[in-house]
Length: 203
Image 1 (cartoon, rainbow, N blue to C red):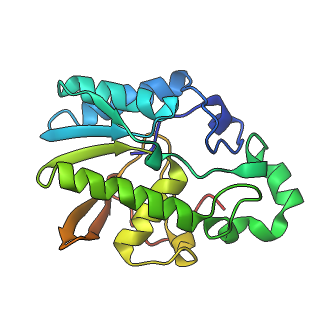
Image 2: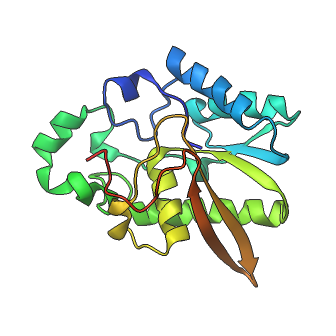
């Protein structure tokens, strides 16, 4: 699940790993998510250690009498020099790195999508080892969810640009299992019922 909205989402600023709190809309999205997932048999709730993810996860965990387990490997991409900038300013200063390119380009002074995918997959692998059966909720961030989704679809970072972005409070599901020591992700489904392999509406 992607965290609820923040003021930086509203003003279209690159948040990255800046610890920006949920706004009123984001808190409402968190409560709505808890209600939507109330009937699932959830065995654990994990979140990025950034407050917008933790605070989205909290009502979900509370509904199931669970604690939120935080893991920094589920953080958003480190946006480097982009952090705090508005999208229009990033487009002007780095036009060759925006559009579809942002889904496979290393941020100036920050991380690459490949690095995010690697650490997020390591986090999922730890979860599968801890919870080999059952449904686990992970509250993370838009970019991180994109690259985990790409892994489930068998896409490289370049082709991940075709995946439809997940809105604040939105979610996808996938199966995660171990084949020996190898992590396998499959069966990606958007929880809003839309197709997954569509042109990104956020370009």
